[in-house]
Image (cartoon, rainbow, N blue to C red; front, side, top):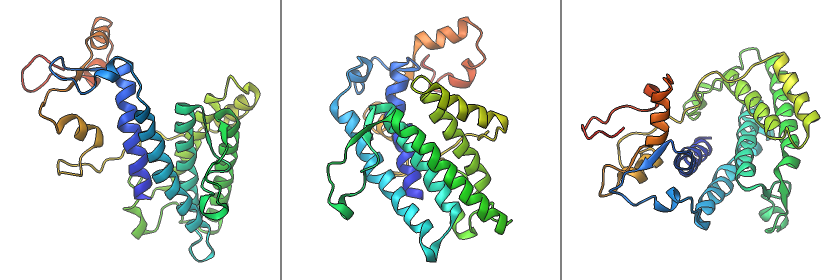
Length: 274
């Protein structure tokens, strides 16, 4: 479980956050630095996609398959772990399909069992309903388990510190799973409006979404333990690299947007940078 969460968090909070924030003008590169010139010019390189693809498939999703197998094996059966695995799997595939449009799903991870090393590519809009069904199955399995084990709303004590997101709180994982379902339905709204609205209306009839930040809060200032975005940004010859984007920060200021002070703050070095 820890490796899955670190893998997904590092991709979404690292290279994907970097590109999204630069392209949406949330922040910019200081004019004395040149590390992100291609990104600022919106030049997407092949290896940018490779990093996302390789990390999510070979690390996160591969480990998720192992967690699902472990949680469903007779001797280690645990619907709580299965719910966590399915929720993370659905979230990860949603990231992949939103980013790439087409990717392997139904034939993925069959290399060792069937020798299929060239799985077919499928469209996200075809896979999202399958992911929602998988989440529902995992939720139903957990609810049945909870009926028989009323105190099963948390992982075992020895497992909780392996859950970086919610510290073993299964109630939070149920809310996270519902939130992923909502996101999948919204993503598919234009492709299959009736299906999407059915999912959305059912969720809204009994809303139970995650209401807290889903944080990967495990980083420190120690070498090899830093936030990956911070590490690639700061471990260079320059300490002034990414800064606030003037266009967006001034837009917030001029319009009196209260998010201004929450997103940006003055640089403590006194160099007029945010």
